[in-house]
Length: 309
Image 1 (cartoon, rainbow, N blue to C red):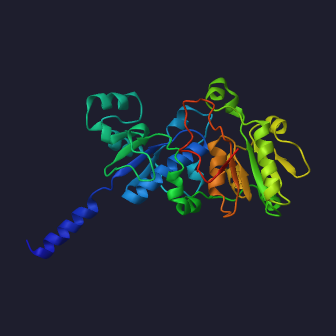
Image 2 (image 1 turned 120 degrees about the vertical axis):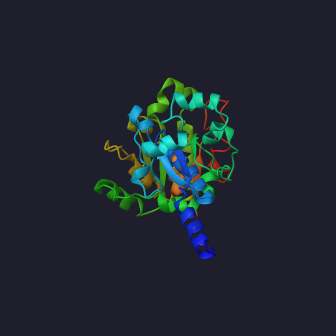
Image 3 (image 1 turned 135 degrees about the horizontal axis):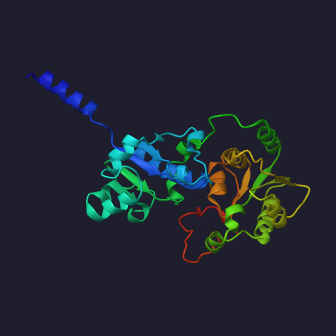
């Protein structure tokens, strides 16, 4: 066999070798999904793995919707064949995966949990097909690929007319988005872990912005209009944006991100609104107490350059 023939055969072999696949387990609301996307995107970009998403959680629980496909994100939904290939001998995520971890030593490289991987800005050391399970709520991860994420986390379709009109109003002068999270946070187990941002927090944030941003108008976004009106002081420069009930809260996220400044709740939803905001001189204010549960640590979640009140 000639040297040329051997070279061609070797090149053909390299081309036919399948690219390793990284499958991210996706769950939770938009904020959680975006943190999971950021981790998967970072690894796939730095290591060169094919990025896929296991969205099967949304077939089991209908109180949340899968939204990554509504943005210009990279990666596709994992097929049954891809899940079977990566999770073998399991076919899907579930009890069999946990059993495989007990039986097969190699399976710890195949199914990787967040608590077992090194945390930080560096991508986990993954060079082969793997399934990653976690929330990945570390601010360093998305900030390390900030421009990539801001380009990709944009809407595929134009917003509905009502939100476009709101956006036009927001862009007419200095603006600040205030997020009041209530909804599922009012449930007992969530109150124990998260708690609710107080009226004092919002008043302090508004006073700070009034002192530093002349003529600012506050736009209040909330999943509970009643709660929002209880904790945010009413004034001529306060606009309460009532939810549209069209299940397009991903559009609300982008409207919030378009405000000049952001007052977040203790919620990953407004965390991402602040992250996606492109104003280089923005003020981001976050609650000093993100978690109500003292065993939960927010030091890796909230960037140190955001103001805490």
